[in-house]
Length: 221
Image 1 (tube, rainbow, N blue to C red):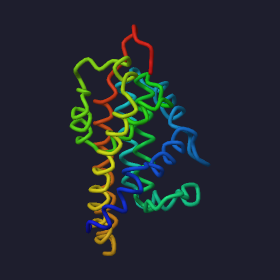
Image 2 (tube, rainbow, N blue to C red):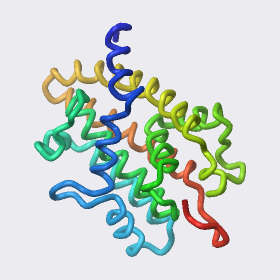
Image 3 (cartoon, helix red, strand yellow):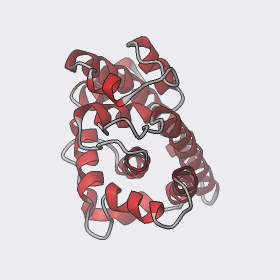
């Protein structure tokens, strides 16, 4: 991907995040035929013995969904984006955002708050999300409480979004190479599905680390 293309993508969903915001709204409220992430979380929470088990099963099924051939295309007109995010990438991002948000909800976080929304989007960067958060002073695992998250300023949220935007540009470039392989019959479908499934698995594991359990003494964000 050349510099001009990177700058164009960065403007689209690195700086403004309009496309990801639109996907997040769709994940929260649901789209025709697909429940919102809160309902998704509740459905897993009621079927499993504990939150960790529910999260693990949620990740497993969402990884399978991301890897399924034709998923993005199957969403069809329900995901007509107002910005130029490729349809196949939008489908995977939607699945990942919905999964991350459901994990956050299962952990007790308010997925409608700006702070949690930004952390959800940060998880799209995969394992790099931990470094991004550390760079702005948020050390996951070091007793990050809801009070700490509530104190994240708008300026810091914008820094996180900007950093994630760069990561997503890189991811889009990598996926572009995968799309070239998709032109090869049979092989393309296997490679594309494997890439999406592997990326979604990393994202799910990252979300599980970022959204630590909330103690009984805390009030959810």
